[in-house]
Length: 151
Image 1 (tube, helix red, strand yellow):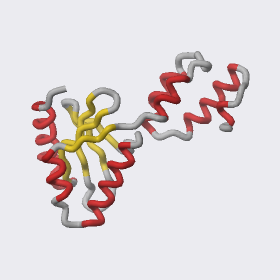
Image 2: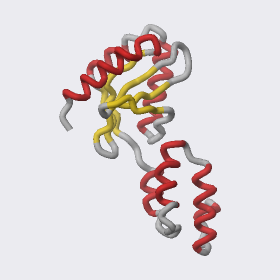
Image 3: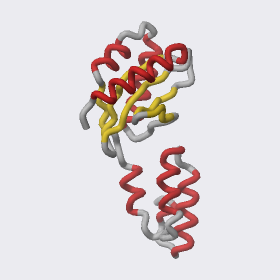
């Protein structure tokens, strides 16, 4: 059994949740920080839902065309692996780029980026991709595509 979830007093549970928070990735820390700041250490049912959350990843034809068109098979495989991790709830290094579009950043090769928008709590729609050299044009195209999509 995990030490932070063993039956304990309120303050011990709170301390255990703090240790748990330290082991999480950045997006998860934001959610748990909000829970811990509520001063109700016994209310952590949301944490289980968040940890077990997964995303449904949908690819637009533009994204699929870009990804399948990559000539370097190792790069293709690494980006597909990143999408698999995202589907399991680990979005990794992401940054908003405006108008509801976010950028998944990969720090290898030429600095690969994949652009997505999130619909609801569990749906991610992949819009496009590129590298650092085409970043501005890729962001502009992803924003344009996101604006044409229905919820």
